[in-house]
Every structure is written in C-alpha cells, then in structure tokens.
Image 1 (tube, rainbow, N blue to C red):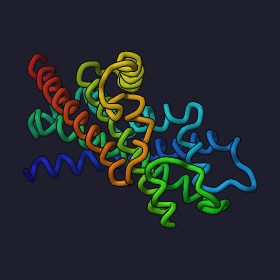
Image 2 (image 1 turned 90 degrees about the horizontal axis):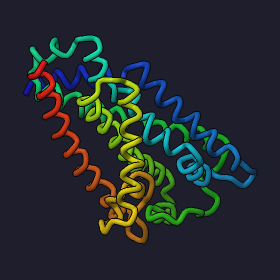
Image 3 (image 1 turned 60 degrees about the vertical axis):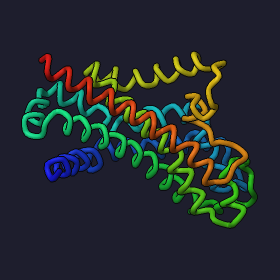
Length: 256
C-alpha cells in the first residue's frame, strides 16, 4: 500500500505540477473567453457569460474533450515511447502502475477544467456582477434563487469537470491499445461522436446517452439529484475504463 501511495504521489506530481497542466488551464480560460466574447454587453453578468463560455461554438469540444487529456492523458504513451514502462513496472508491478496512471490522469483532467472554469469566473467577476437576473433554467438554478452564486459556480465547475475526467480516462484506455500521442487525443473524441450517432434512437436512460452525459444537466430535479444523475454514470464508465486499461496494459507488458 505504501508503494502504491508513493507511486500515486509521483504520478500526481508529474501530472499537476507540469507545464502541460498550466497550458491546459490557460487554453481553457482563453477558449472560454473567445466563446463568450460576442455576448459581452453592458447588462451581462458572470453567470450569463459562463453559460455561453461552456456551450459556445467549439468551446465544448476543446474544454471538455481535448484539454483534459493534455496534462497526463498521454502519460502511458510517453512512457512507452521513452521505453520507461519497464522501469516503473519492475519496481511497482503492472496493476499498481496501470491504476496509478489512470487515476492520476482523471484527477489531472478533472482539476484542469475545474480550475479553468473557476479562474474564468473570477476574472469575469472583476468586470461584471455575478448575476443581475436568473437567465438559466438548469436544475442548479435553485442555488442562485437562494443567493448562492459562488456555490453555483463551484457546482457547475465540478459538474462539467466530471465530463473532462471521462475523456482523460478514455485517453489512458486508448493509449493502452495504441501508444501514439495523436491517436490518444483523437480517438476518445471520435468514439464519442460515433456513440452519439449509434445511440440517438436507442432505448436507454437519457443520462447514459453520450451527448447528454457530457454536455447537459438533468432537468427538473433538485441540485443534488442533478449532480447524482451526472456522478453515478461517470463512476460506472470510469470503472469500466479502468478495468479495460489494467487488463490491456498487463497484456501488452506480458507479450513484450
């Protein structure tokens, strides 16, 4: 257990205290600003701009699907490319190595988006009021109605960062099969769009449909219920991705 904790610390250090992490956060803030810049008016407020920043043309794809992969989603591909995999595996074991890579990747992806959203909101609050009027209709709106705008921003940040964690975990899973950095970034997005098409008319719960799970908030429920409708499917999918990642990395190392 101590060995695994030490390995996790090393991976998290490499993931979060890295140039890639800083670049990811910076680009998230930049893309969000560009997406909402056309909606800046004298009557705009932070909540209004935040909504457009997260759902604007092109921003969702980058902020939730690409940026979370940059901090550590390509770490296994990098280790393979640098022939460093065996160095770690010999000292820690395949299972611990794979689990540490996966968890570190999703934490880094989650934090990069969460921090980016919070910093964007703080920067906008310097120039605009937090909210003039309630313009959103999502299930978290009760927080604004109870005059809790800071809590609303934090919940929105965590909500969308869970989507980011999915893509970061998906990138590690892909890298277990294909150790090409471009493929590691592109494949999760391609899979996402393919799944969107395949399940468009499928009879599955709406909160399991890819486009809704990644981009939307479950409507007409309490804030806690909306959050659970997001959290539980993400946990299930990350569990599946973790299982696939560990099995495939173990298979690759054993065959090589």
